[in-house]
Length: 112
Picture (cartoon, rainbow, N blue to C red):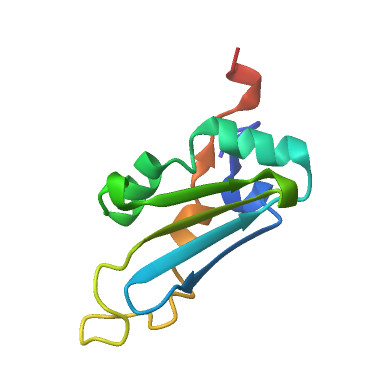
């Protein structure tokens, strides 16, 4: 990583995932302060299009909620397989935050 680049996991206070019933996964991203929240939200790294690409789901099925009052973003999308089914490898969806946390944010110094 070059100077000035951050991953979402480095910027955020907490990035977590959990199941939202047998058919959905929810990702939560919490920030310590408003500048970090604004940087992440404005970067587009949390957009439905990015989530669709990273998690291989149709972006139109991604539910995206900005929660500025608590400096958080909540994202939900359909699970690729039903929780607990034969093809499910993460029953509680507790490991699904890892790809999101690894996303790189654009260098704010290069933005004009």
